[in-house]
Amino acid sequence: EGAGPQEYTLIKMEVQEPFPEALKSFKGKKVNLVAATLRPETMYGQTNCWVHPEIKYIAFETVKDGIFICTRRAARNMAYQGFTEKDGEFKVLLEIVGQDLFGVAVKSPFTCYPKIYCLPMLTIKEDKGTGIVTSVPSDSPDDYAALVDLQKKPAFREKYGLKDEMILPFKPVPILEIPEFGNLSAVHVYDQLKIQSQNDKDKLTQAKEMVYLKGFYDGVLLVGEYKGSKIQDVKKNLQTKLIEEKSAVIYYE
Ligand code: A2H
Image (tube, rainbow, N blue to C red; front, side, top):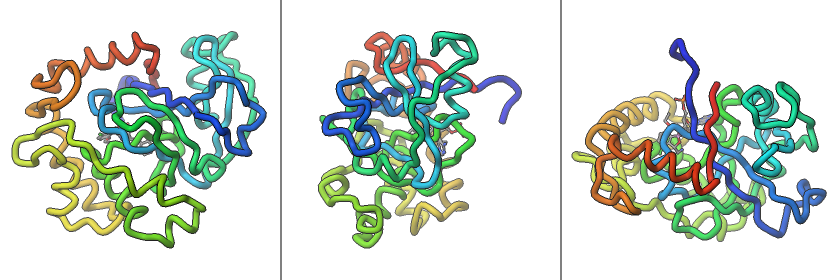
């Protein structure tokens, strides 16, 4: 961690009907799973949402954006950033674990998939961001590895009661062209390093180092209104666009 606070873009992923059992009391309300990302320019490639099966999440009411679901720690941070009525205070409406959210359908900005599903990722850290991660398997090696684990292993899907249609139709979407790595950079490095699973920690660290800098400096967008532009020139514009259309907010920690 650096010295100053880290700025994240919080992506609001709106829970779709039918609500799962755990969220039944919120029926008729606007409920968002919120995911912290450093890469708003990749939101065109979202294929699903990740939560950790055993991590505890809470629901709380925000002033402007309906109900948010995230870790208690993230809610507390948000309460000091003007998200709630009284500074530093938030009321816990519900406490759940990630497992309770599996299979929930959400609507997320920019992605070509009209709805995406909430699925398990076992490497999510409790003490970073919101504990909820949006998945972009085209450009994030962690996301691709976790998605392949679910797609290749029927037993893994069964263990969590997930239906094939929540997982199998979702392919990585080419959204960025990166010199040397092509238009699915995470898939390229996953194959090149022969990564075996989401738990392949050292190789995944290496994979992330390989694609990250190159993507940031030389990556070109393949989709959307900034198609043809370099990422570094339009990253901020895309963040602003997400915020203006009320699909995202800024969050620090
Ligand atoms: B990134 P940093 Cl396309 N546990 O978003 C594990 N990972 C988490 C997390 C948590 N609690 N909260 C956020 N993250 C992920 C997109 C993305 C991301 C792409 C490529 C790389 C990448 C789509 N997933 O991150 O430690 C989120 O995934 C590479 C590290 O604060 C978030 O951005 O630097 C990033 O990690 C924040 O990590």
